[in-house]
Image (tube, one colour):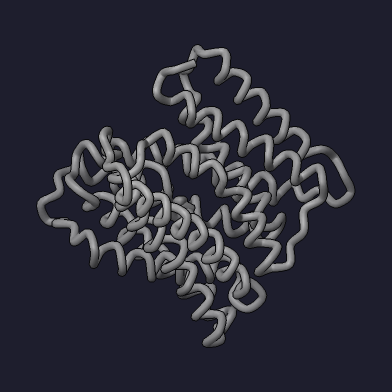
Amino acid sequence: MTTSTGAEQGGHAVANTDPGTGSGRWRGVAVMLAGGTSNQVGAATGALAFPVIGPAGVVAIRQWVAGAVLVAVGRPRLRSFTWSQWWPVLSMAVVFGAMNLTLYLAIDRIGLGLAVTLEFLGPLAVALAGSRRWTDLVCALAAGGAVTALMRPQPSTDYAGLTLALVAAACWAGYILLNRTVGRRLSGIEGSAAAAGVSALVFVPIGGAVLYLNPPTPVAVACAAAAGVLSSMVPFLGDLYALRRVPARFFGLFMSVHPVMAALAGWLVLGQVLDWVEGAAILVIVAANAAGAATLDGRP
């Protein structure tokens, strides 16, 4: 994701402060829409393989596919890396893997829409950290209230799943901060590609053990591999394209609707239905993210 989240999104590229207008901007918007849809459909597709190989198996295959593709695209010159470049890359690789693993474990327990919504608290926290604007305080309080509503005690409340999603949020926040450091020390996407490659290697023993204990079917492997392409490669390259054609603030506003897209993907692909409290909480967190992104240019 993004992830991006994106799971691997956020911090992948430096936005152009004067993006193109007209048809170029519309192309950027179209690519953002396609990338967001791909991200959440990919996560839902990966979840289809949970009954066969479990979340850890899906994440392992996803990391392998994403790592292979991004290394091929970024072509990092690993032998030329210095230690000051290696340590944030290695740290980002660990955080990247932990982010995806905890997110998919959360998806297995509480559903795609809710897990992705809580994960988005990570970039929101980064955006609001250190702010002194009253609007950002309102955003933080609103998001906190929504999380409280989601974690309200009920017989069906899955606290482990909610906690895993919050861990994924913390990992995403760390990923964004590390990606900034990597971006300052390495040109282009070399750092992100190297981190994806290292993370894929870390999952070799993990995935090997999981897949040995849970023999995969061709369909399960295909679903997990599709998650690697749809939720990693497509959004990553789409973000690079879009950030050169749309304003950074608009990009942030669009990113805030990903939880809604995740809820729709969870409903359409996995049959996951949210109750009214969960739906309302998701909308509040989306609004907090959108408001936070809208004020990043310094205007109250």
